[in-house]
Amino acid sequence: MMSKTAKRLLLLGGTTLLVGLLAEGLYRAVRTTPPLTMHFRDGARNLVPDQPTATEDLAFRMQIQVPWPRPDIPPGIPTTPPVGQSKPWFGTGYEMPRDNLLGNVTWKPGSRFFICYRGPQQPYFDADGCVEYAFNRFGMRERDDVTLKKPAGEQRVVCLGDSFTLGWGVRREHNWPVLVEGELQRQWPSVRVLNCGGTGSAYTDEYELALRHRHGRFKPDLVLVTLCLNDLFVTNGKLGHYRLAALPYDDIPPADRSVWMNSLLLRDLARNLAAGSALELDPERDWIDELMSLPADHPWYRVKHETPDVYWVGGTPQRALQGIRDWCNDHDAKAAIVIWPLLQGLGKGRTYPFGKMHDLVRTFCEREGIPCLDLLPVLKDHEQEALWVSPADMHPNEHAQTLVYASVAAFVADGLGLK
Image 1 (cartoon, one colour):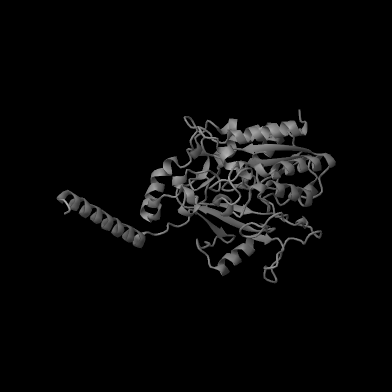
Image 2 (cartoon, rainbow, N blue to C red):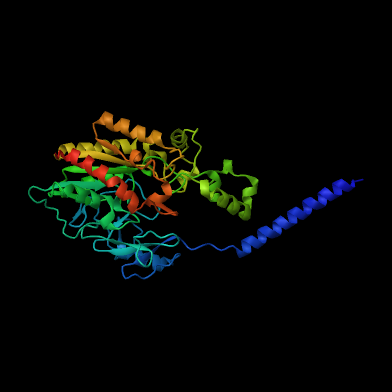
């Protein structure tokens, strides 16, 4: 016969389970998805819905983007030139080495839109919490007076990279290429710095292709390649590597999922508790070795439709940087590299987890004869939160741009041989 204690424990367990199930059901019923922190407005400042319909999404994209040719593009939508053919605004068409999740696209010449933020606001955001993006006739976030023909005596710097070069979340006039140009022109007025970042390229080999087919037409004296660490190894976030407990359930590898994670209530609670330290990784672990050792079918590759081949472990960035250097050697130019750290693990009392990747890049550059500037020493003692555009967007804000531009300007001056 069951003892009174056993009966009480059974009753307690059953009651706890029932209450837990009721709480879970109620939480799922009342839980709402918060609006996206980062959202968009079109060139007329019309708000783009957080979850646009297919028609609304296509209409917005057609205003600001031009896709690479592909069979499923509806008739009448302009594309970049087919392989081997040329268009004055673009250059010579080429095939991308991979297709990204939304299809390969570049910015439409003359287009304009706004990136906007809910939540904490930067002092430079406009009244709607937005930053304007405008593209010239070459589809670059650049001045309208840029010409293919280089004026006599002008020294040109072509900046290649992704959103860290484009200036995601910062005004054009306060983006580092503009600040670097202004700093250099104080002594050398003939220097022009061209922002060719984010023009359809997201990986290092795509930077090389863009130089060979598109941006090399500007006849650079120096090609400055900006590497963000997410160019070099896979992350489980867009611009950071998060602790497992802070990830959405689908991003946690199956082997690391616990039974309690079947509860949406407990998962959200765990993420909220981990939010303050979600970016603080164990300093005793070799994160670069671990990330480079992940198998090709790991969820963090699959969710982005990537493979290790695109990253440092696959050798693609190294070959692309060698190709950029060789192009420069053949065109009377110089190549140089700037490394941006991921903006996590920065500030007093924190440990930056990715120093090994910086070491690998610097060693490679030294061996290959490519000058390299590492911005980690410039930023490592600054609190990471003060460098972000937004807590939900860890691109470098205008404060971060201000911190680095003098170092980049000195590096560029040295690359151009300016004294």
